[in-house]
Image (tube, rainbow, N blue to C red; front, side, top):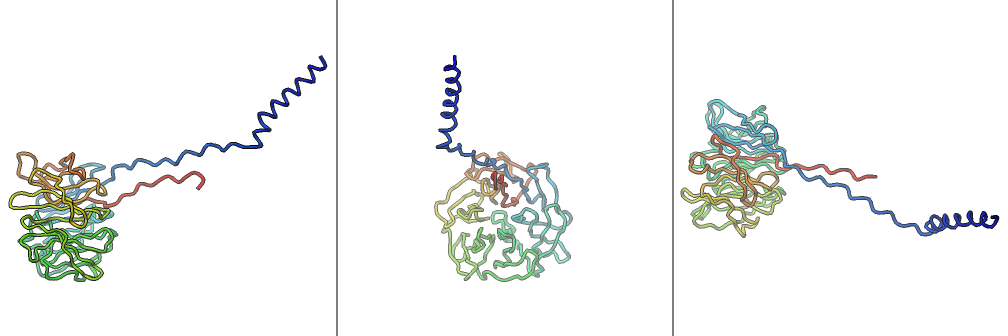
Length: 326
């Protein structure tokens, strides 16, 4: 009995030593913590501003999806352009006693209407009142400058209308649009061609280069993708118009609509989608349509006529969680 009593403590001591003491000599690495979860980006909140009955209207695609007027009265508005932050809209209007089209700005809630240019020459002439061209002004992607076409020349100024400067003269240019890096402005012009093509002017040295080389189809409504890799535009001839996308250098053009009546395209949802105009089957009146950037799943978002759509904001970010321990 005495021997057995001595053996039991010794036995448990050995077991404890093997299970704790030996493992203390060489600790195992604990399993790595799980990576911080990355939330799935939600579809960005967005507004579409468009023209209906000669005035600006807005659709909030996240909250109400109701059509809200931004302007009214006896004036006529053309070609809206929402700022990158989505808070303001540029547009052409003949509001005022002169009846001359100048560039105006309004907040997205319909307040703060402000005239930006005071030209004595109509910026939107009869020849440029053309939905196939869609001669909208353009915001720089940092919203610090505005570029626009006036009597075929390209001008640039601050978003409050101050510090105007000429960018390009003598090209008969329309539809200027900034590149995402702010170094280049693309536009359409005929120059010595029988049709409109896409051109680009480098702002640093004002050098000009031709991007597309169509000979029998006109280009309208060009704009860079938010990442700068592609250019979106419509091609038109007589009564046919289709939406196209090409690389930033003009190569590999790709037709993404097939109804022969699509025009005025603009990027939406950070380049994941495209907003444009097209009539419903069997109808003539244009409506605003939203589709994927590859041309699939087109869905009308207006029902009572809509032209010249613009999407904003241009960029939306999804906040990532802070890693544990940081």
